[in-house]
Image (cartoon, rainbow, N blue to C red; front, side, top):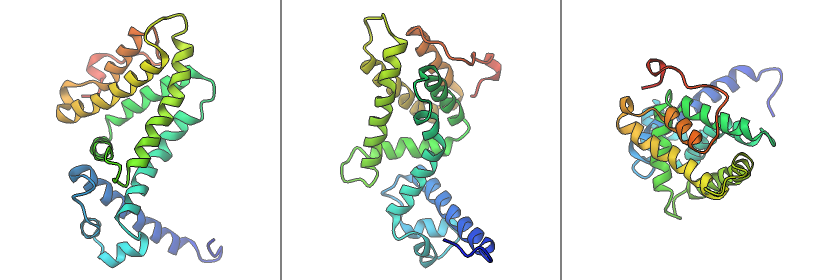
Length: 209
């Protein structure tokens, strides 16, 4: 709780410092991976002392959790709060793909960390394990409804393919952004399954990349 009489200046300064640290951590993690970055590196990149960072975060792992949580604060409602509206879930996931083309730093962070986190000892292992499980749990019933009457693929396989397509496209897009249109590829895949999105594809000259 904060003092209602004098909270704004202190709170604002502290929050801005925390955001600066999280920004610095995210940039360094996306560039070099989690393991290659130290808390002192984060402090230097944020323009703070090591002690200054420790005042806000007890260790490097805590900064990682906050970096990942900030992304989820934006994405989670688009996945978790659509209820039984299966078309809305697919539309939202396509919008996330399109939005990602404007945030290459976050895409790079996700790609690097998800690969590192396959190691059970990695601090983000549980996060990514849960993230993929939650995505599948929401996508399987969605594809069960949208693919009703089709023998193949099964909803389980369609969910796995959809997630794998997005992840693989992100790697290719980071390597050669001008050659990869992630949104168009995802929409095209959905159309092969007989699923259309609410937003039509923009003309080629207006697409990202």
